[in-house]
Length: 494
Image (cartoon, rainbow, N blue to C red; front, side, top):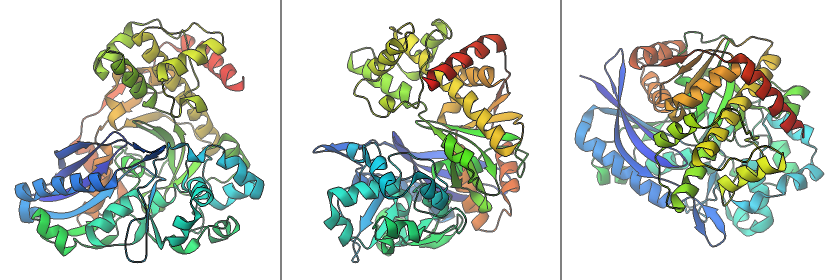
C-alpha cells in the first residue's frame, strides 16, 4: 500500500497542502487544498494573517484525512524566511506578525552599522545584507515597540510557528534559522555575542534542530478537529528554497559544477557547498550562506525575481487590462528584444505602489527607451532578470573557483519558457527547467527519509529524477546578450 506524506507549503502569494504518494520507488504529488496568501495592511503596517492561514491549513489537513486516513505517516511545513511570530511564556501570540516588505525597516541597517560595523556582522552571520532580515526587523521592533519585545518568551519563524500550532514544539529548524542574520555560520547556533551587542533578548531564540527532526505527534485537539490520527510532525528543510534545492534533480550531488535557480516571487541563485564562504569578496558581492540539507550551505544571491512581473500584472489588472501570466509571456515574446533593461535589485522595486511606473522611471532616468505596452514592460523584466542571473553566475564561479556547466531552474518560474530561454542565452549555459514542484518534493522526501525509507540526499534526488519531467533549453544568440551584458554592467556601476 502506498504511504502518504503531507507538505504544508506557504508562499507569498498562496499556500497549499500537498500529499506525496510514496510507493517505495517514486513519489506522486497531489494538491489537496490551495488557498490565497498575501500581506494585509493593518493601520499603516503590513502584516501576515497567520490565524486565517492556520485555519486554511487545518481545512487542507482535514481533506487529506478524509481521503487517505491511516495511510498518512507525517506532515511538515516550509515557508519563506526572515518573518517571525512572538509568543509569551504562556503560549499567547504577541500581535499579528509583520511582513518583510513592511516599511518599518527603512533606514534601520544604517543605524545598525553605526553600532556594529558591517564586516563584523557578516563575520558573525555570513549573511547578505537586506533590510528585512530578521536581525533588522528585531532592531526595528525594539525601536518602535520595546515593551512587546520585552514580553516575548520565544521567537518562532513562520514554519516553526506552524509546527508549534500542529504539535506544540518550540524549536527553530536550521535552514530557516540561517536566513535571520542572527545565527553563526560556523557554530550553526545563535550568534549570542552579536545579539547581546545589539541589546536583543537572546533568551527568545529557541533550540535549533536539523531538517528531518521528528518534532512530536499532532496535538490531540488538532487531530480530533481535523479527523486525523496523531501522525508525526517532521521538520523538513523549512526554508522553501532549502527544500527546493533538496528537490533539484541533479546527478552531481557533492560537486560544485551546477547551479540552482529557485524561481518564483524571489529568484534565489546559488551553489551547494560544504562550508560557508566568509571572505571579504563574498561580503563585497553581498552573497549569503544559508543552511541546506545534510550540513551543506547554499551560497546564493537573492534577486528580486518574478515579483516585478507579478506587480506589473497587479497594476494592469487595476487598470482593467486583465491578462494571465501565459498571455503576458506571449506579449513579451512579440516585444522588441533587449531594448530596455533595469537592475531588478534597485531598491525602488522592493514595494512600489505602481511597478510599471517604477520600471519606466528607471529607464527614463538611465536614458533608455521607455517601455510603454504591457509586452514591453514584461519583456524588460524578463531580460533584466536573465542579465542579473548572468552576473550572479560569474560571481559564483569566482567564489568557488569552478566552472558551472548547467543551471537547474526549479519552482513555479520553471514553467516560464521565455524566461528560461533568456536565461540560457544570457548565461550561455544549458538550462534544465523543472520540476515545478521541487519545494514540495524536497519537503516530502525528507519526511520519507526521516521514516527510514531513504538514506541520502543523492538517493532522494534519484527519486526526483524518476518522478518528474524536465525541459532543457540550449543557449543561443551570444553576441546580442554580450552587448546587453555590457549595458547592464554600466547601469549597475551608474
